[in-house]
Amino acid sequence: MKNNLALALRNESDSVKVLQRVVAACEDVKGMDIAVLDVHAVSDFADYFVVVSGRSDRQVQGLTNRVIEELYASGMRPLSVEGYEDGQWVLVDCGEVVVHVFYEPVRAFYDIESLWMRAQRLELPGAA
Image 1 (cartoon, rainbow, N blue to C red):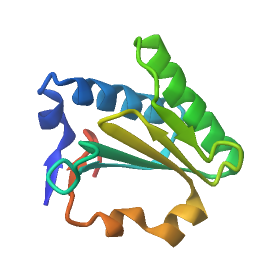
Image 2: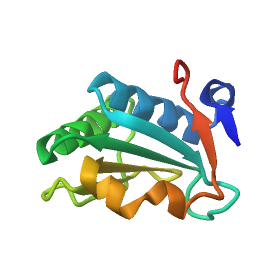
Image 3: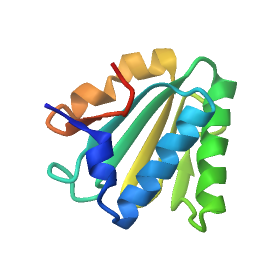
């Protein structure tokens, strides 16, 4: 079942503020197929996953850079960043929000959304 991301964003928790900034950063640099998974009911280490794709390793790195820049501009910083050098699957741990930035074929291979299919997928505003 999909819920509208706009409804989740009405909540002013810190994780939702981070989520807003991450999604905006991904949209800003044309991240592909942005998915937001509400994992708080099925995970004890995060509230949300953001999954986004790039068409090349350089775009994956660019998406990652933009997310990190947005966090720093907001006075936040990621807890860790893994996989940046290869640009195939970059994980940005923002605490309660975990960002997975994939090179498009790698995302299809790992199919992380199916691995977390019990998580609720939030519909982005303006998405069909």
